[in-house]
Image (cartoon, rainbow, N blue to C red; front, side):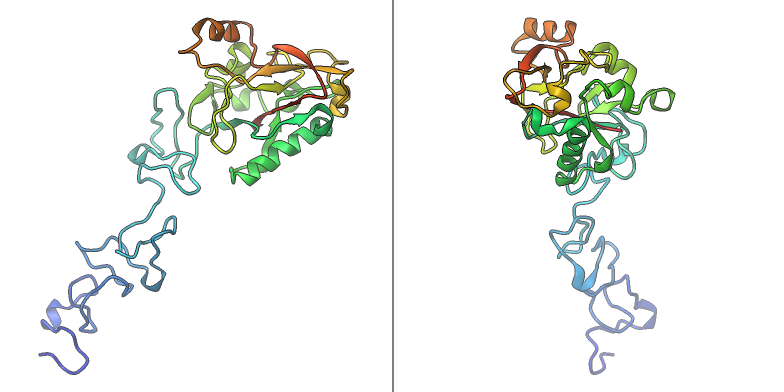
Length: 280
């Protein structure tokens, strides 16, 4: 029987906080902080929010979240049921249960810098880290620039060796760049490092490197005076971010064969070029 203040009362045996009539004899509804079985997936009460990542919507259904098969919010990847399974998409890498790549990120800097604007190799690393932080990439403080001078080089400074064997490099768009360090220095980035930390695709961009394919310094004396000079009288080596291989198959084949990604031409240090940024 309906008593004052009750919205429903099918009898004690029928009352349930997961049913149509709650134990307080109120009709179940979205926003009451109770999850009605078969009707609602979730209910955060007053905290239901259509825009909150990992939350519950105003219709009491799960909002954007990891493992729903859509890349959104803070996610790097999302293969749905494939997360954490070791499944590897074509030309991609595995995605873990937290929607993070089982790989190390590499991106092309969205900004360009004159040789002297880098402030040395250490300054170049800091620029990569700041860009990663602004893009809200995980591990932002562990990014380093692919750049060399007489005292530094990726071969000397990057994390590589047995502990990184089999750990691939991946662009922000999920495309595998290389299977690991050994593959990178042997074959170069197979698809090119053409995606910035913001997701923009930039083909045939010149990139400051001063570095040969092995990751070592090209010329101990040709690196914009340790990346402190923007003089037109001083030069350093640059690479090219990559080409559209379907459109320019011959040029792309040459780009690959000659490792032009890191060692293409020498340019004066008054020019503004980009950086390759690698997660360690």
